[in-house]
Amino acid sequence: MENTDLELFDGYIADSLSLEDISAFEQRLETDASLKKRFEEYKVIVGGIKISRANALKQKLVRQESKYVSTPSIKPVLYKIAATLIFVVAATFIVNQFTSEKSYEELYQEYYSPYPNIIDPVSRSEKNNSSSLFQLYEEQKYTEVINALEDKERTEEERFYLSQTYMAVGQ
Amino acid sequence: MEHLGEPCKSLLQLFYFDRFTMDAIADRLGYKNENVAKSQKLRCFNTLKKLALERFSQDDI
Image (tube, rainbow over all chains, first blue to last red; front, side, top):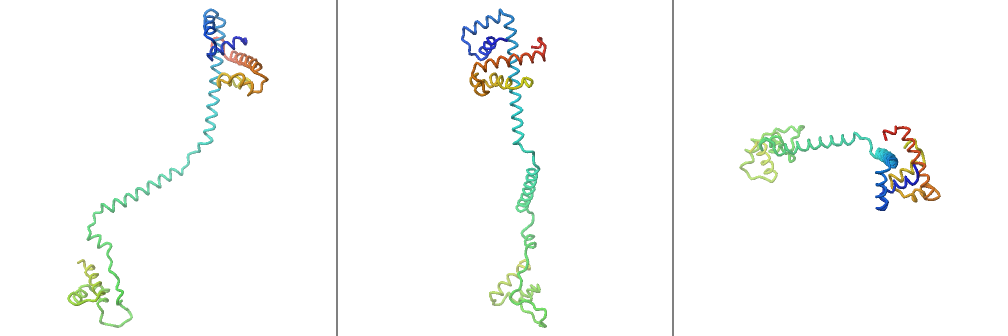
């Protein structure tokens, strides 16, 4: 191929020729079979150059991308599983809290425990046959405590333990 | 293109794909001036054409 051909073809493809030159070139293409053949070859070669360059750039991009895309780690999966388990446990707990079918009475029985006797604790070493009201309370003789305290004037401590006794017997 | 070698490969790709001017190509590839780069481009183009014709028959093109 001559330099004049190449410059003409380049100019035509790049649309940098004048209108007269374009018209003259297109007329020559119709009448000059040899020129037309050379131009067709030119277009194939240029097409090959462009495809080659595009493929090279694509491969370069893929290589660059592979440097920054880390291999999938198992950690995110474990985090997701852990988060799901925590959510399920928390949701189950919350749902149970609000949809529990236990009655107040059952809940009371479940969580109630008698307040300890701190006023006059039972001493195992003492040989004393008579027990104070507080010791009767500690020994869970609630009926006796109620009978003894119900109709008398009570101290503050006695009132407290009487109320505890009522709670213990479920009144 | 792989068989073409350098600097022809870069020169043709810069001109036909990247659309660099011949002046810019001369500057980038270290040619003395634009005309030297143009002469080199013609040689490279003809070499590539020859390689292509060797590989494919005229009928394929």
